[in-house]
Every structure is written in structure tokens, then in C-alpha cells.
Length: 74
Image 1 (tube, rainbow, N blue to C red):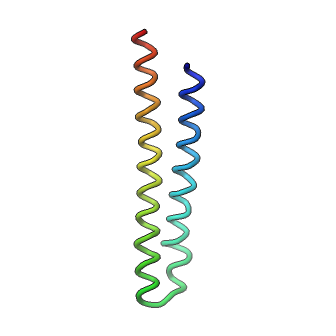
Image 2 (image 1 turned 45 degrees about the horizontal axis):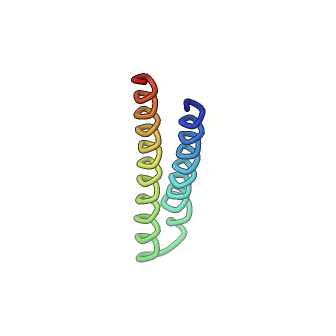
Image 3 (image 1 turned 180 degrees about the horizontal axis):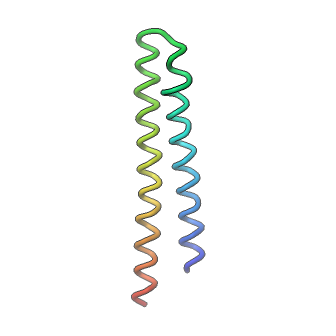
């Protein structure tokens, strides 16, 4: 049971980190090379992806803690 929780946590960490990094690359690296509207859209999309990545990581941590508490109760 414990290894399943760790494997699941690893997946959410990797997925969240990749999504957050893609968001940062969009907002900080790619967006400045464009003008006006595309710059704003890429910046907003990058920030949303960055926040979404952090939310995915937090969800994975929450799931892992809940599974750990459930294992301790049994």
C-alpha cells in the first residue's frame, strides 16, 4: 500500500513540475518575443499553466497524506 502511494505521488510531482515548467517557459521565455495581443495571451496562458502545475503537485501531496493517514488507522 505504501509503495502505491509513493508511485502515485511521483507521477503527480512529475506531471505538475512539467506543466509548471511549460507555463514558465511560455510566460518568461516565449511571450517577450511577440508583440501586443499574442504576448498577453502567451503570458496569461503561461501563468495559468504554472498555477495549474502547482495545484497538481498540491493535489498529489494531499492524496499521499490521506493515504498515509488511512494506512496508520488500519
